[in-house]
Every structure is written in structure tokens, then in C-alpha cells.
Length: 259
Ligand code: PGA
Image (tube, rainbow, N blue to C red; front, side):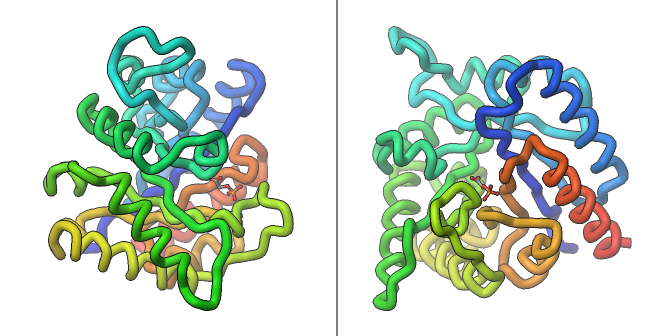
């Protein structure tokens, strides 16, 4: 039987108040009720996670980043243990918007380890800024995977979810262009091959791979059907009605697929 799809909404730094966050979460919750064989996750700003967790058990909560260690004198940081303690189950790590703020693969590697240690499921974002004819982008993604997962034991690597997000396709990138399912399929195969060479073919199969980058209600189904992935990471902007439409479209598709 096919594994469950996983749809993750990245709210980024939105919405501006807890009241709005609750309202949106309730709407999403209604829109996905009855969705079959699909895990839905909302990665909300830290401040809202605990409150939202109490609203619906159908939707899992995640954070959009976490520190590389559990406790200490690190002004402004939030540790993965703290997040697990308030009910987060997932955490996005290595998002391109954090990489431009200076995060590198070595730091992300520490964060992945700390997240797993705290019992969170890391959603590791990888993806190139640009494609090139010589296919250097494949080497870049390979290095991201290898360096971000370095030193993590085989069994624990299977807990990591890899989200392929080509930066050139993300909705907030200037002069962005659309990725198509063939782009995601190529990368999903490449990521599995990289994991297979690094760890084992069994672990490479176990790791869930998602696609993210301007997914919309029209192409979401195509990415899930022919993009080689088992889920989507969507933002754009995840807190607006457009995203609810996307989730409803995905719901319909999931119902169609599994009924
Ligand atoms: P988008 O963003 O869906 O708006 O392209 C995806 C992301 O940044 O995670």
C-alpha cells in the first residue's frame, strides 16, 4: 500500500496576531477534515504552536527552525527540546530563507542532530539557487545532503524528511520561474541515489521526499502523481485563503486517489 502523503504548510512570519493564527488554523482544519492517507502539518511561528496544538489533533504542528543545542546562554534561540515540550512534532531546518541569513551545512547538521535527539522530525530543506547546463546543481544538492546528515546513524536518517525546494521556483524569489514535476522527479531520484550510496538502499527508500516551490492548486496533483515525491511544502503565502484552496484541492485529490 502506498505510504501516506504529507502536506506541510510553512506559515513563515505570519500571521501577525494569535487571534488570526487561531482563525486560520481552524479554517485549515475544516478544509482538511476527511482527508485520507495524508498527514497535514502546519509549521507556525514559535509563539502560536502551543495554542494551536490544543485546537485540532488532526493537524500536526511544527516549527520553522530550532537551535543546535538543548539549553544554555544563547540569547534569542529556541531549543528543540522546548519545542517538543509545547507539542511540536516537526521542525523545518535549512530553509533557503535561513541559509541567506548565514546558516551553512555544518550548522544545519548540528540542528538536525539536536532536533532528532529531542524527538522532533526534521524537514531538511535542500535546493539550488540556479540550474546550470553542466548540472553542477546536482553536486550542490549532494553536498547539502551529505554535510547536513553527516555523523547521523543510519536508523536516525530514516526519520529525516527531505524537502527539495529549488530557490529559483520559490514564490518570493525575484524573477522566479516555475518548476515542473520532471524537475522534482529528477531530483527525487538523485536524492534517493545519494542516500543509497551514503547509507543503504533501504534507508533511501524510507526517507520521505517532498517538493516545495510555488506549488498551487493546479499543479499540486501533478507534483504528487509524477514528481517522484510523497508530499509538498507550501507557503506562498500559506496563511492566506489561496493556501486554503490549495489544501482543499489536495484534499479532493487525496480522496479521489484513495477512495
Ligand atoms: P512558496 O514557498 O510555496 O511560497 O514558493 C515555499 C517555501 O518557501 O517553503
